[in-house]
Image (cartoon, rainbow, N blue to C red):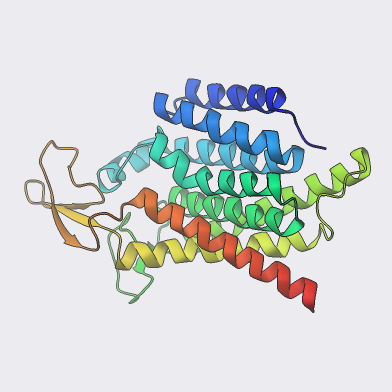
Length: 278
């Protein structure tokens, strides 16, 4: 079962408006969420829609979880909790591209790729929002060196477990939605629903870890000489310009997230073909 454009756009506007009202989206984030949501909801239908909505609501809820504790770390991150157009495209842009391809090439492998993409952004969001609350000191994924909480590319065991749970949840939701579509609407969205749990978990966790590798190596990281603090932004929240201390200036956190989502979709596609050819 697929939604028509009107149904998809109404659903996208409703979900985005709710997130905007809760303070999870900026105005630019609201507009871009409506566009990406309409594309995905209209083309993919129920099974695609519930995955994006699951990510949308769980990530928004976690971003507000223990806000007072996370506030002290806000200066390290490029942006705040109100997601703007860059963050929306970083998290949902590649999924929209996959949906557009699916409109002309409606094959199950593209649904697997979409599942991997959503699992990755969900895993990464869970790892970020919950990992910073870990009692253990984070370590750089590349060297194992202890780093300050909130440092790009630094992970904890708790944060990694959170990423696993975020990816696994998308797999469970994908399995349930496909099974529902098959039982109620007699629509075969995917030929092996149970395999989606493995596809989502492995590709989603892989995407999240790849995101951390990029954050520890090539993402642009800056330093504020005035406050003597490291940040992802080229302009610190104190109002002073910062200087690049490592990585590529053009590679910011939004682009890292987008690249990781692409990586996860490729991983999901590979897992799908391996399972088909075995």
